[in-house]
Length: 109
Image (cartoon, rainbow, N blue to C red; front, side, top):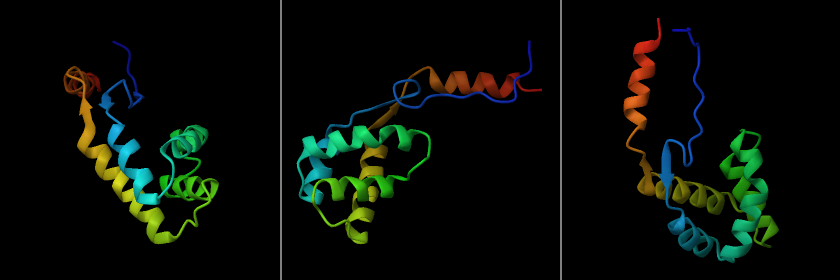
């Protein structure tokens, strides 16, 4: 078997399923903005978020600005914290993930 130094896994819909409906309901209310506008802006920023070009707090600040809301540090932090909380509550590993990761551990030299 060939030696591998790394294994890259995509998170969403590869190793974890996340129901984002709570995000859609709770985060816009927290910020006092439209859910449609917020998620349109989120989709625009998603590529940069996915590769670490911007942080989640930077993204929420940009989203708030685009929605005409002052990105106060306390609001941006509250949105990031709530987003993380909802992500942890709604994310579920697919059944085959842990067995696959265990296999990777034993394949390494």
